[in-house]
Length: 368
Image (cartoon, rainbow, N blue to C red):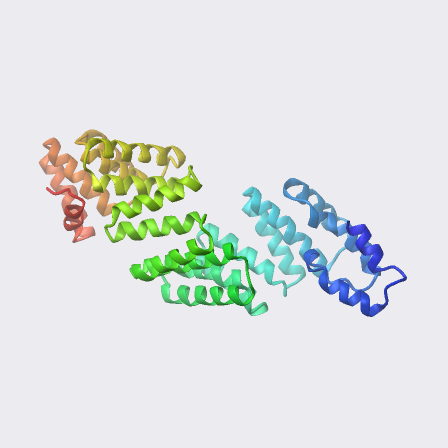
């Protein structure tokens, strides 16, 4: 395909103006070629563009090591190879390629954006924000960069700044007629920030908008599920987790959230047994999830299986889960086992960490 394109573009029937007009439309290959002398080099580079996965890594490596490319072209080859490494989960190799891309072309916004994504994934949110800043300085209408910077600010607890960035991402998405599925993700990001601020009505409105734009958006259903849990509307939470699991059966967060909602509702033993199945599956999918251990500990507590409740709370605390919740639940389990000294010690520690923890558990139907 690309051979034919370059031969046509550089053939005798096209004058310079025609070439410029057609070249301007070849944005899919990210090449700012200058005339037909660059065409042969660009044609070689298209193998790097056209491949995916290991094939892309091999093709881009060949282009990078060929010595034929420099500047913007060489930077682009590094970005494409970096993206292929990122997709494979080799984030160290991806980061090295983005570093090289920036070295060869410091004005490439995509390189800074992609490197920001690496830092986001590592939890280094300050460094992520710095890279998104660079990307946005170079390309002020970079909707995805605003969205991902929103994520980083949200993770840092700077919720107002996160919302401001997501507002801009949504605005740009509409102006640029970005596909609805991507704009839906922008609404999810803003909903997450509103939820962190405990503005549950606005968060739910954002998740509703995301679902309207993309009815299969699992993150939107999950976000709304957690809003319903926070508002103690557990039946609606279960319905949203059902929707998420219908679309993504192996989603451990949806399993854990549905387990929690079912456990709080309690009722017949069958409901608690269904909750337990969800928690078991959540831990099968993510064996070291401290929050799933905390949730399952609560289910066992309600089932009066105090030994298993204590064991799960132990594991949650070991893995760094919800300290107050696990301590309080473990304290109740120990009290009901007859170990008053140890139980009261856990409850005291939980109350010191979170003074309203007893009231919270009373809302779940559990008290001393």
